[in-house]
Image (cartoon, rainbow, N blue to C red; front, side):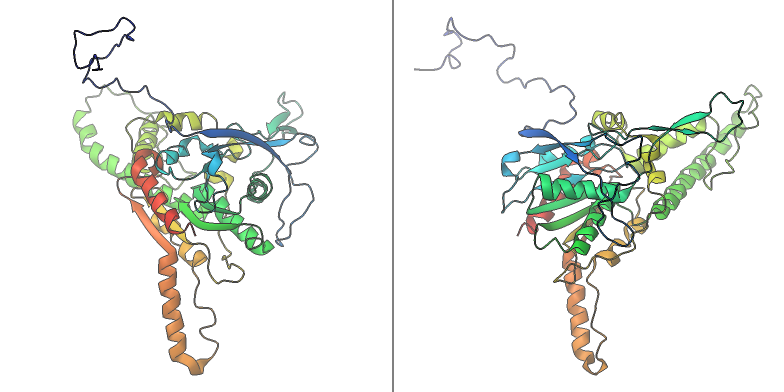
Length: 429
């Protein structure tokens, strides 16, 4: 029987009315934070608080976070697994994504799921942000005069990278029980991923319990001091360019109607090396910095707005939270001389510049250990060094995302996702 669509005169009584004309495209979808079309499973897990001391020993003692004000308050981490049925697929190990900030939850990383479609993808919110537990504030006495009415202030426990690493270890080994997985860290999440691998190397558990098939460090600095100085340099360049372009205009258009600036306006902040002006132009410069080096889209995407609205306490945010961090140790996997295959990725205009990521090659390379032990075997040593160099080039790859900055997964979803998919598929085995 011919369909009524072929004959407009044959219209059945039970036909479902349509609001669309044949051949006319459907209306666009309303804006969404992330349309993945993939099955997902939300979950929560209560972690124990343990820390790793400076001697690299795993201690059962309570951390600084478990003081009298926080005792008895459970720490619950919220996570989401896309395509959960494939979580333990040996041929397609899952991709575990660690968000940055610190304390900007994992929402903004969700576009990765739209491109990495052949396996499970895991996201979780670190302690203090998103849907995970918030640190309990405590009240401490303020150093002030006795007549001051505000004698006490609300404060939070100090931010701790070792505590975050321990939370990650418990999720991987005890809750999800992952045997094989790929690890992606964006910004601060890359520091967390690297410190986790260092912990597993010291504990010698990567062979017996689980294995990281590959590591992706996306816009991750090796040093908080480096990324601070590079951000200041980029901001100075923007300010200088703006001053050069506006000086002539201001001189020619000054007809005496403009108000004179106050004492604190139009001057350079003495507490910073950057030329950050305390006038209304500060907002303009910070917005220009965002559109140049953070997210190059004209308007802040909804998915990033949603993540920023769920940030953690002020003391756990930004570069200040990781002040003094330096990636000092080098990964030396037991039984091998190299780290997992690694992809170093950043945006072309990223404020995490090439200088900020340059040191990762030294931390993750095999080096030429043992090549200088015997001076009589110079030729063999040269060959070994050459082979190690070739091996390093194969295991450590770099990718600069064109016309992207810090949030490449939002600025160019396909480019960012395809680079990840290409790399992890190379190292699934």
